[in-house]
Image 1 (cartoon, rainbow, N blue to C red):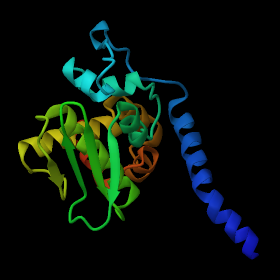
Image 2 (cartoon, rainbow, N blue to C red; image 1 turned 120 degrees about the horizontal axis):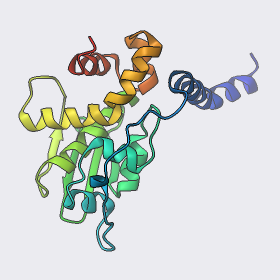
Image 3 (cartoon, one colour; image 1 turned 30 degrees about the horizontal axis):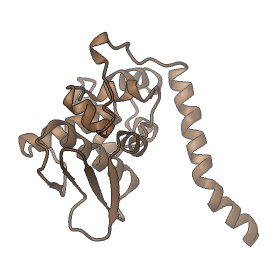
Image 4 (cartoon, rainbow, N blue to C red; image 1 turned 30 degrees about the vertical axis):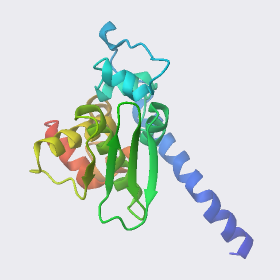
Length: 207
């Protein structure tokens, strides 16, 4: 393979992989399967507050609501895009000694992610930090080194939020039917680690 062809291949490879994942999503889902949400899921955007703060103030902290709000119909869920639209500032830091952290005031939220983590881990970390932001007291900084089962209650709650955001019940159940429950294929489809997918299937009673 010529040098030019090598350069083109490595530059286009991420786009090809994204395209393949999109095709696989279409093959699995065919059309949106997200359940309709009730009228209770209305919110009023404050002109002075970021969107995450408006939603939190009005009690809209359900991951399914975020997916509905941002019209997410298929995996993988663009958690970085969701954070950006919520008005959450995301930083990347080198060798912090932890995977992620979040801090907030009444009007500002910032998340720090460790440089060098695998993309699937970074995605879960960001979703986990969003869980802290929506579920737990403002003004408290949370730093997270790992997300294993059996951790503290607040960490377990942030884990559940992250899993529900990245692997929604309704998406996973549809994907199970079309993939035969193949964990590797499911993990690839949702862009999560195989261990995260295994835990999610267990928690949903699908394994």
